Image 1 (tube, rainbow, N blue to C red):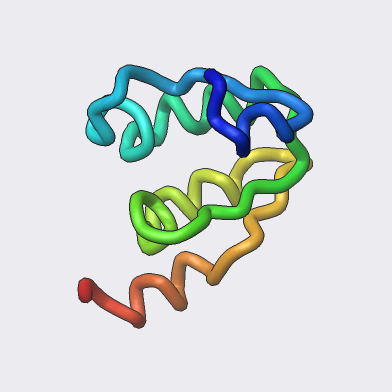
Image 2: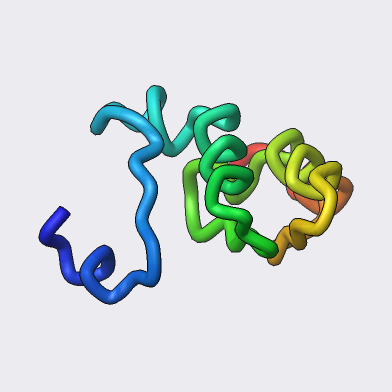
Length: 81
């Protein structure tokens, strides 16, 4: 991609087609990208999976990968907005 944030990134990974339901909301695709790159930490950003307790739990269950966001318990306590 020619977007500025991709140009400045160390590495970029395509996680799916433009539809968010097939990419940014696809936990399997995001987790596969984490594993394939050997990432040691994940920041969930804003929106999409950042407020998804199941996603936080899946990242916490990965060995040697830190989830840089609230715990699944905290996300559940926040509830849906």
